[in-house]
Length: 327
Image 1 (cartoon, rainbow, N blue to C red):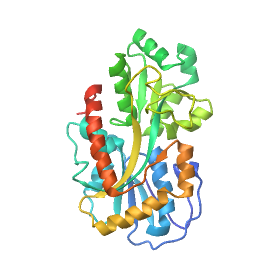
Image 2 (image 1 turned 90 degrees about the vertical axis):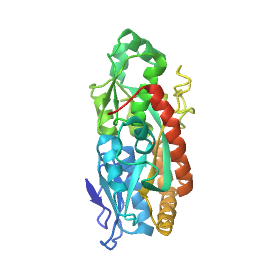
Image 3 (image 1 turned 90 degrees about the horizontal axis):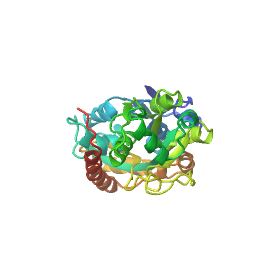
Image 4 (image 1 turned 30 degrees about the vertical axis):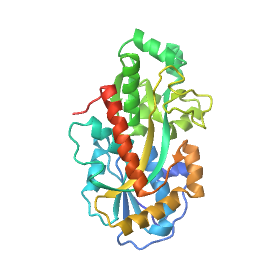
Protein backbone atom coordinates (compact mmCIF):
# COMPACT_ATOMS: atom_id res chain seq x y z
CA UNK A 1 0.00 0.00 0.00
CA UNK A 2 1.45 3.37 -1.02
CA UNK A 3 0.11 6.73 0.09
CA UNK A 4 1.62 10.08 -0.84
CA UNK A 5 1.54 12.95 1.59
CA UNK A 6 0.35 15.78 -0.69
CA UNK A 7 -1.74 18.91 -0.56
CA UNK A 8 -4.87 16.86 -0.85
CA UNK A 9 -5.39 15.39 2.56
CA UNK A 10 -6.44 11.76 2.59
CA UNK A 11 -7.37 10.01 5.80
CA UNK A 12 -5.57 6.71 5.61
CA UNK A 13 -6.52 3.65 7.62
CA UNK A 14 -3.87 4.42 10.19
CA UNK A 15 -3.88 8.22 10.14
CA UNK A 16 -7.65 8.56 10.30
CA UNK A 17 -7.68 7.70 14.00
CA UNK A 18 -5.18 10.47 14.65
CA UNK A 19 -6.95 13.17 12.66
CA UNK A 20 -6.10 14.43 9.18
CA UNK A 21 -4.93 17.85 8.14
CA UNK A 22 -4.43 19.53 4.77
CA UNK A 23 -0.82 19.25 3.62
CA UNK A 24 1.00 21.89 1.57
CA UNK A 25 2.25 20.76 -1.86
CA UNK A 26 5.87 19.81 -2.35
CA UNK A 27 7.96 19.00 -5.40
CA UNK A 28 7.13 15.52 -6.61
CA UNK A 29 10.72 14.59 -7.43
CA UNK A 30 12.90 12.62 -5.06
CA UNK A 31 10.42 12.06 -2.23
CA UNK A 32 11.59 10.34 0.94
CA UNK A 33 10.06 6.88 1.35
CA UNK A 34 9.35 5.46 4.77
CA UNK A 35 8.94 1.70 4.54
CA UNK A 36 6.71 0.16 7.21
CA UNK A 37 7.37 -3.62 7.26
CA UNK A 38 3.86 -4.36 8.56
CA UNK A 39 0.31 -3.98 7.19
CA UNK A 40 -1.65 -0.69 7.38
CA UNK A 41 -3.54 0.15 10.55
CA UNK A 42 -1.13 -1.08 13.22
CA UNK A 43 0.76 1.10 15.74
CA UNK A 44 3.92 1.34 13.61
CA UNK A 45 1.94 2.33 10.53
CA UNK A 46 -0.07 4.93 12.45
CA UNK A 47 3.07 6.38 14.01
CA UNK A 48 5.01 6.45 10.72
CA UNK A 49 2.26 8.45 9.02
CA UNK A 50 1.92 10.82 11.97
CA UNK A 51 5.67 11.50 12.12
CA UNK A 52 5.77 11.93 8.33
CA UNK A 53 3.02 14.54 8.60
CA UNK A 54 5.05 16.54 11.12
CA UNK A 55 8.39 16.10 9.32
CA UNK A 56 7.11 17.29 5.94
CA UNK A 57 7.88 20.90 6.92
CA UNK A 58 11.60 20.15 6.96
CA UNK A 59 11.93 17.20 4.60
CA UNK A 60 9.35 17.90 1.89
CA UNK A 61 7.38 15.20 0.13
CA UNK A 62 7.22 11.91 2.06
CA UNK A 63 5.68 8.62 0.96
CA UNK A 64 4.78 5.87 3.42
CA UNK A 65 4.77 2.36 1.95
CA UNK A 66 3.72 -0.89 3.61
CA UNK A 67 5.83 -3.93 2.75
CA UNK A 68 4.67 -6.63 5.19
CA UNK A 69 5.70 -10.26 5.40
CA UNK A 70 7.91 -12.76 7.25
CA UNK A 71 7.53 -11.04 10.61
CA UNK A 72 8.73 -7.72 9.19
CA UNK A 73 11.81 -9.21 7.51
CA UNK A 74 10.71 -8.51 3.93
CA UNK A 75 10.33 -4.75 4.30
CA UNK A 76 13.47 -4.39 6.39
CA UNK A 77 15.58 -6.42 3.98
CA UNK A 78 14.24 -4.33 1.09
CA UNK A 79 15.57 -1.14 2.68
CA UNK A 80 18.90 -2.76 3.51
CA UNK A 81 19.44 -3.27 -0.23
CA UNK A 82 18.52 0.30 -1.30
CA UNK A 83 20.97 3.09 -2.16
CA UNK A 84 22.26 4.84 1.01
CA UNK A 85 21.12 8.27 -0.21
CA UNK A 86 18.63 8.96 2.56
CA UNK A 87 15.65 8.63 0.23
CA UNK A 88 14.53 5.23 1.53
CA UNK A 89 14.36 4.48 5.25
CA UNK A 90 12.59 1.86 7.32
CA UNK A 91 10.60 1.94 10.51
CA UNK A 92 12.32 -0.92 12.27
CA UNK A 93 11.08 -2.36 15.52
CA UNK A 94 11.77 -4.71 18.40
CA UNK A 95 10.92 -7.70 16.22
CA UNK A 96 12.96 -6.77 13.15
CA UNK A 97 16.13 -5.57 14.91
CA UNK A 98 16.27 -7.49 18.20
CA UNK A 99 14.04 -10.56 18.20
CA UNK A 100 14.14 -11.88 14.62
CA UNK A 101 17.97 -12.06 14.51
CA UNK A 102 17.74 -14.43 17.48
CA UNK A 103 14.54 -16.19 16.40
CA UNK A 104 15.04 -17.03 12.71
CA UNK A 105 17.66 -19.58 11.70
CA UNK A 106 18.37 -17.63 8.53
CA UNK A 107 17.91 -13.87 8.22
CA UNK A 108 18.61 -11.97 4.97
CA UNK A 109 20.06 -8.98 6.80
CA UNK A 110 22.31 -8.08 9.73
CA UNK A 111 20.52 -5.69 12.13
CA UNK A 112 23.73 -3.75 12.85
CA UNK A 113 26.00 -4.01 9.80
CA UNK A 114 23.30 -3.50 7.14
CA UNK A 115 21.72 -0.35 8.57
CA UNK A 116 22.45 3.23 9.53
CA UNK A 117 20.64 4.20 12.75
CA UNK A 118 18.75 7.52 12.59
CA UNK A 119 16.65 7.84 15.75
CA UNK A 120 14.62 5.84 18.22
CA UNK A 121 10.98 6.96 18.17
CA UNK A 122 9.03 5.52 21.09
CA UNK A 123 8.39 2.56 23.37
CA UNK A 124 5.00 1.08 24.19
CA UNK A 125 4.03 -1.51 26.81
CA UNK A 126 2.10 -4.59 25.77
CA UNK A 127 -1.00 -5.62 27.65
CA UNK A 128 -2.49 -9.09 28.11
CA UNK A 129 -6.17 -8.91 27.17
CA UNK A 130 -9.14 -11.24 26.80
CA UNK A 131 -12.76 -10.54 25.87
CA UNK A 132 -15.61 -10.21 28.40
CA UNK A 133 -17.26 -13.21 26.69
CA UNK A 134 -14.23 -15.42 27.25
CA UNK A 135 -13.93 -14.19 30.83
CA UNK A 136 -17.58 -14.98 31.53
CA UNK A 137 -17.32 -18.40 29.92
CA UNK A 138 -14.18 -19.46 31.81
CA UNK A 139 -14.30 -17.39 34.99
CA UNK A 140 -10.89 -15.89 34.18
CA UNK A 141 -10.46 -12.48 35.80
CA UNK A 142 -6.73 -12.45 36.60
CA UNK A 143 -3.46 -13.82 35.25
CA UNK A 144 -3.50 -16.46 37.99
CA UNK A 145 -6.98 -17.51 36.84
CA UNK A 146 -5.68 -17.76 33.29
CA UNK A 147 -2.74 -19.92 34.33
CA UNK A 148 -4.97 -22.21 36.40
CA UNK A 149 -7.45 -22.59 33.52
CA UNK A 150 -4.67 -23.32 31.02
CA UNK A 151 -3.18 -25.99 33.27
CA UNK A 152 -6.55 -27.73 33.54
CA UNK A 153 -7.19 -27.31 29.80
CA UNK A 154 -3.88 -27.74 27.92
CA UNK A 155 -3.84 -26.36 24.35
CA UNK A 156 -7.39 -25.06 24.76
CA UNK A 157 -6.26 -21.43 24.56
CA UNK A 158 -5.02 -19.97 21.30
CA UNK A 159 -3.10 -16.74 21.66
CA UNK A 160 -2.81 -14.33 18.75
CA UNK A 161 0.17 -12.18 17.82
CA UNK A 162 1.07 -9.70 15.10
CA UNK A 163 3.59 -12.18 13.74
CA UNK A 164 6.53 -14.41 14.58
CA UNK A 165 9.11 -12.42 16.51
CA UNK A 166 6.68 -9.75 17.69
CA UNK A 167 6.58 -8.63 21.31
CA UNK A 168 3.25 -10.44 21.61
CA UNK A 169 4.83 -13.68 20.42
CA UNK A 170 7.75 -13.36 22.84
CA UNK A 171 5.39 -12.53 25.70
CA UNK A 172 3.28 -15.61 25.06
CA UNK A 173 6.32 -17.89 24.87
CA UNK A 174 7.76 -16.40 28.06
CA UNK A 175 4.46 -17.01 29.84
CA UNK A 176 4.46 -20.63 28.67
CA UNK A 177 8.05 -21.17 29.78
CA UNK A 178 7.65 -19.46 33.15
CA UNK A 179 4.45 -21.24 34.14
CA UNK A 180 4.53 -24.54 32.28
CA UNK A 181 1.16 -23.97 30.64
CA UNK A 182 0.38 -25.13 27.10
CA UNK A 183 -1.19 -22.47 24.89
CA UNK A 184 -1.07 -22.34 21.09
CA UNK A 185 0.55 -19.47 19.17
CA UNK A 186 -1.43 -18.19 16.16
CA UNK A 187 0.62 -15.57 14.24
CA UNK A 188 -1.11 -13.00 12.04
CA UNK A 189 0.15 -10.48 9.50
CA UNK A 190 0.05 -7.47 11.78
CA UNK A 191 -1.43 -6.30 15.07
CA UNK A 192 -4.81 -5.26 13.65
CA UNK A 193 -5.60 -8.72 12.26
CA UNK A 194 -4.41 -10.38 15.46
CA UNK A 195 -6.63 -8.25 17.66
CA UNK A 196 -9.62 -8.81 15.37
CA UNK A 197 -9.20 -12.57 15.82
CA UNK A 198 -9.56 -12.15 19.59
CA UNK A 199 -12.54 -9.82 19.30
CA UNK A 200 -14.27 -12.30 16.97
CA UNK A 201 -13.54 -15.24 19.28
CA UNK A 202 -11.29 -17.10 16.83
CA UNK A 203 -8.46 -16.79 19.36
CA UNK A 204 -8.81 -16.32 23.11
CA UNK A 205 -6.07 -13.93 24.22
CA UNK A 206 -3.36 -11.60 23.01
CA UNK A 207 -0.43 -9.68 24.42
CA UNK A 208 -1.46 -6.62 22.44
CA UNK A 209 0.40 -3.39 21.93
CA UNK A 210 -1.18 -0.88 24.30
CA UNK A 211 -1.60 1.53 21.38
CA UNK A 212 -3.74 -1.06 19.58
CA UNK A 213 -5.70 -2.22 22.59
CA UNK A 214 -6.49 1.03 24.42
CA UNK A 215 -9.61 2.02 22.46
CA UNK A 216 -11.23 -1.40 22.87
CA UNK A 217 -10.25 -1.53 26.53
CA UNK A 218 -11.97 1.82 27.10
CA UNK A 219 -15.00 0.58 25.15
CA UNK A 220 -15.23 -2.53 27.33
CA UNK A 221 -14.57 -4.89 24.42
CA UNK A 222 -11.29 -6.12 25.91
CA UNK A 223 -10.36 -6.82 29.54
CA UNK A 224 -6.76 -6.00 30.54
CA UNK A 225 -5.19 -8.56 32.88
CA UNK A 226 -1.61 -7.24 33.09
CA UNK A 227 1.02 -5.14 31.31
CA UNK A 228 4.33 -6.68 30.22
CA UNK A 229 6.70 -3.98 31.52
CA UNK A 230 8.20 -3.74 35.01
CA UNK A 231 6.16 -0.58 35.62
CA UNK A 232 2.44 0.04 35.33
CA UNK A 233 1.18 1.94 32.30
CA UNK A 234 0.09 5.50 33.20
CA UNK A 235 -3.08 5.05 31.14
CA UNK A 236 -3.93 1.81 33.02
CA UNK A 237 -2.91 2.59 36.62
CA UNK A 238 -5.10 -0.15 38.11
CA UNK A 239 -3.76 -2.92 35.86
CA UNK A 240 -0.87 -4.86 37.44
CA UNK A 241 2.40 -5.77 35.79
CA UNK A 242 2.97 -9.41 34.87
CA UNK A 243 5.40 -9.62 37.79
CA UNK A 244 2.79 -8.24 40.19
CA UNK A 245 0.27 -10.67 38.71
CA UNK A 246 2.42 -13.67 39.61
CA UNK A 247 4.98 -14.07 36.82
CA UNK A 248 8.24 -12.58 38.14
CA UNK A 249 10.98 -11.28 35.83
CA UNK A 250 8.62 -10.39 33.00
CA UNK A 251 9.78 -7.31 31.04
CA UNK A 252 8.90 -6.81 27.37
CA UNK A 253 7.94 -3.64 25.50
CA UNK A 254 7.50 -2.73 21.85
CA UNK A 255 9.83 -0.08 20.42
CA UNK A 256 10.24 1.39 16.97
CA UNK A 257 12.91 3.46 15.25
CA UNK A 258 14.08 4.85 11.91
CA UNK A 259 16.98 3.21 10.08
CA UNK A 260 18.52 3.76 6.66
CA UNK A 261 20.73 1.46 4.58
CA UNK A 262 24.33 1.06 5.69
CA UNK A 263 27.01 3.61 4.71
CA UNK A 264 24.81 6.71 4.60
CA UNK A 265 26.53 10.10 4.44
CA UNK A 266 26.79 11.44 8.04
CA UNK A 267 25.50 14.83 6.85
CA UNK A 268 22.36 13.20 5.42
CA UNK A 269 21.91 11.20 8.61
CA UNK A 270 22.23 14.36 10.67
CA UNK A 271 19.63 16.16 8.54
CA UNK A 272 17.16 13.30 8.87
CA UNK A 273 17.85 12.94 12.59
CA UNK A 274 17.23 16.62 13.28
CA UNK A 275 14.00 16.68 11.25
CA UNK A 276 12.59 13.48 12.74
CA UNK A 277 13.57 14.30 16.32
CA UNK A 278 11.89 17.69 15.93
CA UNK A 279 8.76 15.98 14.57
CA UNK A 280 8.74 13.28 17.26
CA UNK A 281 9.09 15.85 20.03
CA UNK A 282 6.39 18.14 18.60
CA UNK A 283 3.25 18.91 20.58
CA UNK A 284 0.94 17.05 18.15
CA UNK A 285 3.09 13.92 18.45
CA UNK A 286 3.19 14.23 22.25
CA UNK A 287 -0.61 14.21 22.27
CA UNK A 288 -0.72 11.22 19.95
CA UNK A 289 1.83 9.26 21.97
CA UNK A 290 -0.20 9.96 25.09
CA UNK A 291 -3.34 8.55 23.46
CA UNK A 292 -1.37 5.50 22.36
CA UNK A 293 0.17 4.90 25.79
CA UNK A 294 3.62 5.31 24.22
CA UNK A 295 6.71 6.98 25.70
CA UNK A 296 8.68 9.23 23.32
CA UNK A 297 12.34 8.15 23.01
CA UNK A 298 13.84 10.32 20.24
CA UNK A 299 17.63 10.69 20.38
CA UNK A 300 20.90 10.46 18.49
CA UNK A 301 21.99 7.80 15.97
CA UNK A 302 24.72 6.68 18.40
CA UNK A 303 22.17 6.21 21.18
CA UNK A 304 19.99 4.10 18.89
CA UNK A 305 22.98 2.00 17.83
CA UNK A 306 23.88 1.27 21.47
CA UNK A 307 20.24 0.57 22.30
CA UNK A 308 19.84 -1.99 19.49
CA UNK A 309 23.04 -3.79 20.51
CA UNK A 310 21.77 -4.04 24.10
CA UNK A 311 18.35 -5.28 22.93
CA UNK A 312 19.99 -7.96 20.78
CA UNK A 313 21.78 -9.30 23.85
CA UNK A 314 18.62 -9.07 25.98
CA UNK A 315 16.42 -10.92 23.49
CA UNK A 316 19.02 -13.55 22.81
CA UNK A 317 18.40 -14.62 26.38
CA UNK A 318 14.62 -14.23 26.15
CA UNK A 319 14.35 -16.22 22.91
CA UNK A 320 16.55 -18.95 24.37
CA UNK A 321 14.50 -19.05 27.54
CA UNK A 322 11.21 -19.14 25.61
CA UNK A 323 12.39 -21.97 23.39
CA UNK A 324 10.78 -20.25 20.39
CA UNK A 325 12.33 -20.79 16.94
CA UNK A 326 11.31 -20.09 13.35
CA UNK A 327 12.92 -21.99 10.47
